[in-house]
Image (cartoon, rainbow, N blue to C red; front, side, top):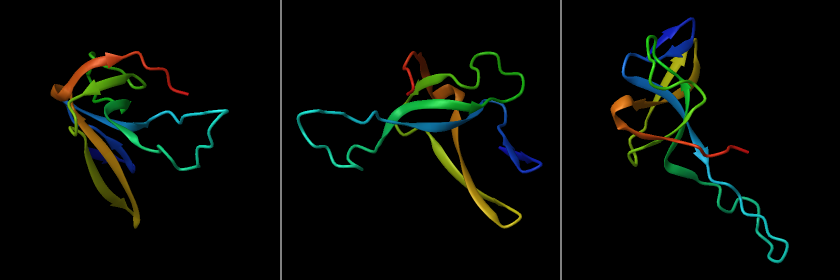
Length: 101
């Protein structure tokens, strides 16, 4: 990716994504402590930014990719540290119809 006024923009063939957390279980019969099951899916991601000229996928879509195909990249702008998660288009296997809460 490259930075445009501090905003990460992906190169062709790559997407900037976010990880999707697994849904928390609710039960009226058993006490489930806070913090239990706060994990992310290994291969389900939400597309946050697409490269220019991309027509296959749009921002906001949920995709299924190869397990552990995402790559987190740390960066700093004016002393403020942040990170983005990159996913190659070739690693995307399918669109998901998962509903987010």
